Figure 1: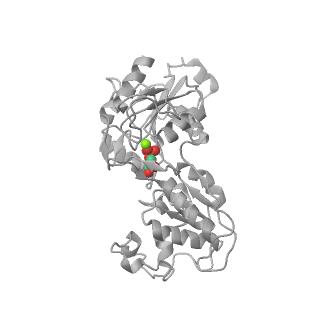
Figure 2: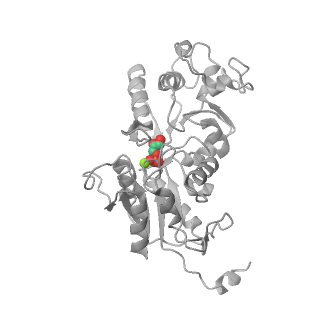
Figure 3: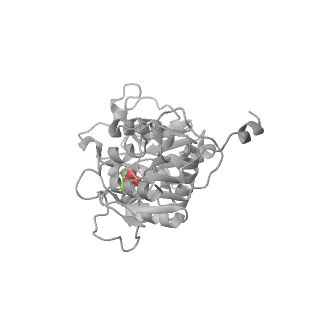
Length: 357
Ligand code: G3P
Ligand code: MG
């Protein structure tokens, strides 16, 4: 195509707004849709399947690759979701690929943390489950645990098999908390071993390898009526203990909302998702021409994460707080007041479509 071919074509009308949906407490509670979310999403499509505005899911959760999450959301919500419409807490870990591509790294958390990292291109990833299994007696209470890890059940890498990498002489270059940890006690123990020894569990003190968290949510809304402890709570537990047993305080970096760069990145993705004619199919990925949004809506349930993030990101973000998750107040949140408070995500979408009408 020549430049002139592009220029000669009349510029189709593009939507001037986009939407970022939080997942836990807005779209789902556990695996159950909440707040009329399937209906709310369907309202974003016109009768001919034309998408009225680009949207994506911006969650601090994770544990499976974006492609799998997109398939899961498609099934649960009945709307076709592309992998590019899923931004998870760990999605920005991709940006560290160059630094750790061929280094031994440890990934932990629920789901398939090592798969997530190898999907991003990291070549030498071990889950903490697998890594710990190569160190006899590293967990002194393992015999009291009635469950068995996937690693222990996996025949291709049975417990006490030959490690895939030379874990006894290869230093752990970094640890990544990809999703909510499952076995806090064991994970804190093994992370302390890795971090205080400089990447060689069981050895003398050494320089702490970098530690990355996908998010820092103290609490989040799952299926249980009251909030559940999140990755931020795990970070506090690890940090408190590490700082008592080690001379230098724990160093770490947390990704996820409310970091302003997450919102900048989301704006960039929404721009790429912004097709000239949005259709509910997989063929239309838009073009790379940038187009400034007048408004980007963040629909979330957690004032100190979703609303704070949108506030810090500033223009063009507009925050909408729902009452289906962490926030359950009657009026607006005192410390991080949203631009709008509604009961459900469906109400939020109705408001947006009317306002943008
Ligand atoms: O573990 C998930 C939780 O930290 C938050 O998820 O979708 O509310 O950002 P979300
Ligand atoms: Mg939430």
